[in-house]
Image (tube, rainbow, N blue to C red):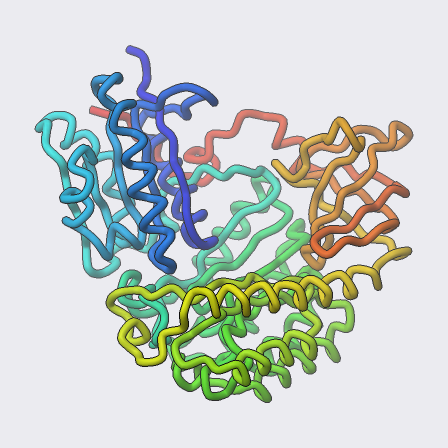
Amino acid sequence: MVPRTYQVRTYGCQMNVHDSERLSGLLESAGYVPAVEGQVADVVVFNTCAVRENADNRLYGNLSHLVPVKASNPGMQIAVGGCLAQKDQGEILRKAPWVDVVFGTHNIGSLPMLLERARIQDQAQIEIKEALEVFPSSLPTKRDAAYAAYVSVSVGCNNTCTFCIVPALRGTEKDRRAGDILAEVQMLVDDGVLEITLLGQNVNAYGVEFGDREAFGKLLRACGEISGLERVRFMSPHPRDFTDDVITAMAETANVMPQLHMPLQSGSDTVLQSMRRSYRQDRYLGIIDKVRKAMPDAAITTDIIVGFPGETEADFEQTVHVVREARFAGAYTFLYSQRPGTPAASMPGQIPHKVMQDRYLRLVEVANDMAWAENKKLVGKTVAVLVANGEGRKDEATERVSGRAPDNRLVHVALDSAVGVPRPGDVITAEITHAAPHHLVADRVISLRRTRAGDVGEQPVNNSVLLGLPVMRPA
């Protein structure tokens, strides 16, 4: 019997990327195999985001494109999961009746069963659970990279930001026990993983469920005790919960990288209050100052929303001021998106798109200038670059591979036959020779360290077996 093929298409944040790894692991444990490039998959899964309006448009546009494809391929199935599925539920089938399965953020483990039921009954299946029953890290996972992995420390969020619908879709915060987290990290390291990223909707609030405000700092220190774990990152923290003990743990734990991604959203105290963000400009910049004193070489990145309802030109200039003061290594900047179901959607003072676009372009110019200035400071310095999948592919034109420095900056590194050809997961030590706003170039290679992660990456990986999970087969 020829196995059915699958393709997972992911939109949104790192949490969605990690969920897609689990969806792939589930499908492969159920006997599916990945569709090769250019092949029409038997099952196409959309793992959706609901943060911005264009996520809706992209989903329904892509679903429409699949109508003739499905008509030409009897037996093909389409599944929609993630935050948008949790939000729209039955609306998806009304707009796209050719969809076979709709599942929510709390029941991704049901996907293989729902696909089978839809096929047997020849009827669309909807399963949306309102609360998490089993922590998703217990599910099979298929990682894209042998050298790096995501590890969830919590799911859900207790914040009530007026622009965000995520808490309503993923629920209140649920924390994993530290022992379970560390056991997963150890298992990943035993499989060759060099770098882990701790994930949570509000990662540094970790511990709130069991009443330990210093739990996240303790978790970082515990990761520092795991032999073979070379790089630890985390995202995304909330300034409200960013305590001094976390900064100290970052600075004192050797494998916690000198990198911080901390959403700003706005530099205006007035807008922050309207957003229901429980910090102000002084508090945010104070955290940045403390991080830089503890880790002078830290690269700090952020998220910013432009054009929140009621934002004046003076408010916008406050955001520009913070970008200049914070000297971000990168800023992910977004136009405010009016999301039904959020308090901000019905606020007075909605900003015209033209005004938002003008402010957006001005802010991006400042942010790029600051990032470029920060990157130029690294020219002449030596960095250890972890060669990456995708980013690590050989560029035939420039004879370079790419990867990430400890501070997570993207670095394009020259190939040097004298040291050998690097693989994803190997580490190149090189000197930075050129800086651009969004990347660095290192054309002076010093050494190449071949790693166990690189060895593992050359082998076919059955992640269900690697993670100690049962391999399931369709009935």
